[in-house]
Image 1 (cartoon, helix red, strand yellow):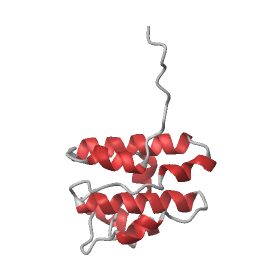
Image 2 (cartoon, helix red, strand yellow):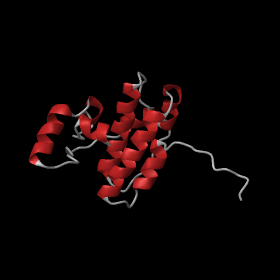
Image 3 (tube, one colour):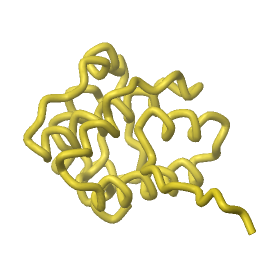
Length: 130
């Protein structure tokens, strides 16, 4: 038996970015869902620390910008300003992660501001069910 118990540490957006490298789309969304679940269970006073460190490149500009939008969106939901690193990330061309006709319309209408202003169109409910 090992005397050293592994202490739980919640997933940070920096670590999430590292886990997205090389992952397929399905796995990426599962990782986002895991991050969101852990984030929601953390006390509000400690959540900001999960967003502070800038993630490295994921190998996909869309996902790099998604992480910035996600960090800003979550910080705003907690009544905090976004980490400074998010300001440098934006897309030149719109991205619809759920690229079906219905998904595009839903995202155009319901994408949170932090995502829209960066060119990432994902409906808010996609983040709630994740």
